[in-house]
Image (cartoon, rainbow, N blue to C red; front, side, top):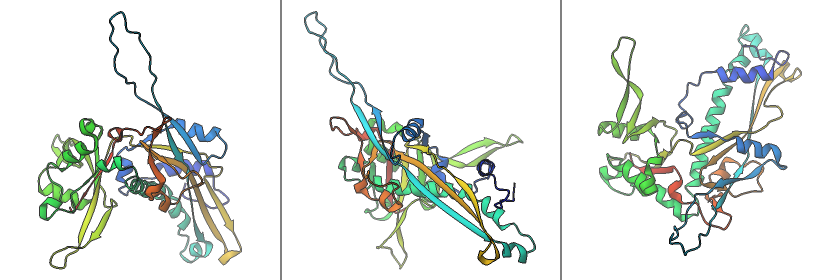
Length: 345
């Protein structure tokens, strides 16, 4: 199905076609499995009016001090606390066009088919970019309790400013203490990965090929956590380089599987074609629209009056707050499987 002109366009078939397109770019945050589908979010948006902001209940843990069972002390019951998470709908749209004359002058090159074949990969890049914006906002929250989830060694000097054999263990312990086993994924820049490889602390996964020979694969582990390498991870140029060389701070994310809830929301017309035969001798346009929720575990988006936040709004710490119970208690940050390491390599 390579011909996507406005006469033959079938939106349902195009949606299935997009799912078959191979994703050749990294997008390691998405590959790592940090998204967990949440039907509860989808159902909530489908049934409530407004459809841009929802409050989702979160179940609390049981607790309390056990009573003395001595035949005299009355047994009193306690209830679990109910927490609520505010989630916001994110809407994005994009369109591309190709002109008839381009087809004519090149002898029939299918430029529109080329555009259509890249739409699935395009949206994967959008999701990852927005996920990075959300992470930036979450780590800028005003809730100081979450500061323990940043392990910053970038202010040190020399090799101490770079990740080492014990950095990951120290970072996860600082973030979640005895709950540090919640983390099982690390996403880092290739500069950080290269430094760890030079220290020989990354262990490559191995597979047996068709000939029975054991070979390394592209995935590795660090202290038992699966490592994904992606150069779209944040890097910031800083002063202090020697011999005129630039120095950078790199952010490495440490996540648990399902650290983010994801839900697709209803869009009346997700994909469509539009043809204008009068402009430049004829022009076909492909329009795509998406609405979805990306909700970090343990955090609420607090700006309730925004129909669809921009990336800049997602990056603003004022718009994110720790989930609270109905009586105002904040979620224990040790339960949040989201942390980061800031280093110079």
